[in-house]
Image (cartoon, rainbow, N blue to C red; front, side):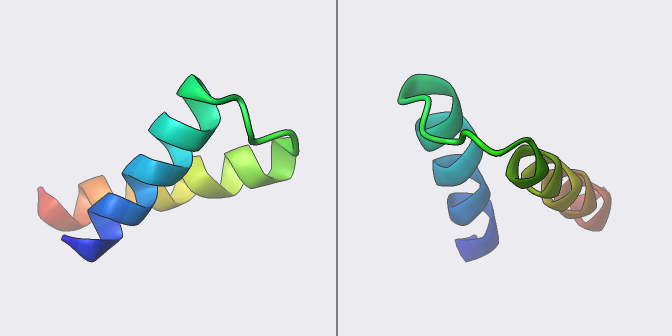
Length: 42
């Protein structure tokens, strides 16, 4: 659950709502982590 919360806060809250992710590499890394998380729970 902690991994989900970290991804949610990073991508959804900081990235989407607040627009705090400015680095394209950071966005890519968060999306890779999100994809890996989804694959784990499938």
